[in-house]
Length: 78
Ligand code: FES
Image (cartoon, rainbow, N blue to C red; front, side, top):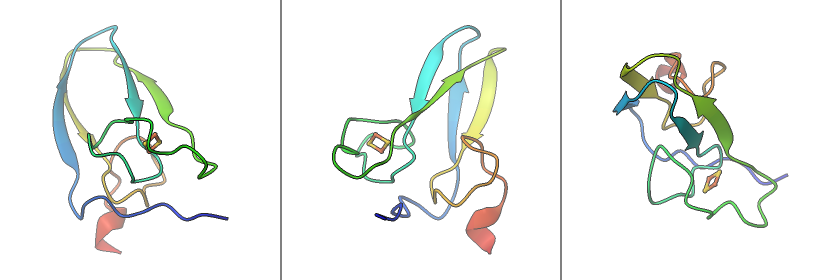
């Protein structure tokens, strides 16, 4: 199986809007990190849909190793 690419070694801070839908890149290939740009085609990966419950700052995982996707859980340190 194709592996996720580490798109970064730190989470990416994004100001999200309540009720808005975001598509987190799970494959690491997007050039619009942390979000999907369609580059996962033919990799077997699909983006993860995330609906913001409230407006505020979210730390999205960039290393793609998180167990709390789409949020950073500190796995980039491991
Ligand atoms: S580009 Fe990575 S999941 Fe779509």
